[in-house]
Image 1 (cartoon, rainbow, N blue to C red):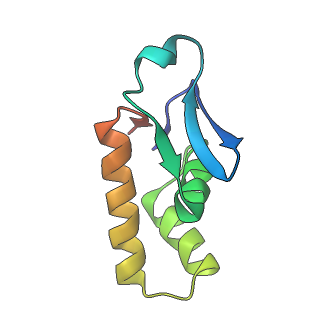
Image 2: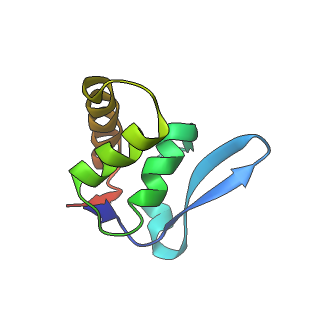
Length: 88
């Protein structure tokens, strides 16, 4: 899975925001602000990657259980799907 082409992260002040470029501007409904964890996942998803690779990345960064990591990743992936930003 990966982020569809045409979406980038822009830092505006203290916020990381997903910005559509080109024709994708009509695909993003509203603004999507990323927290630190979401930014890491978004950046990882800019290239083709697996769910397990996302889990391993988060476990390497944060000292939390795999169960919590998976719940957070699932929630983020659901958000990306709802906003039509993810290729599966």
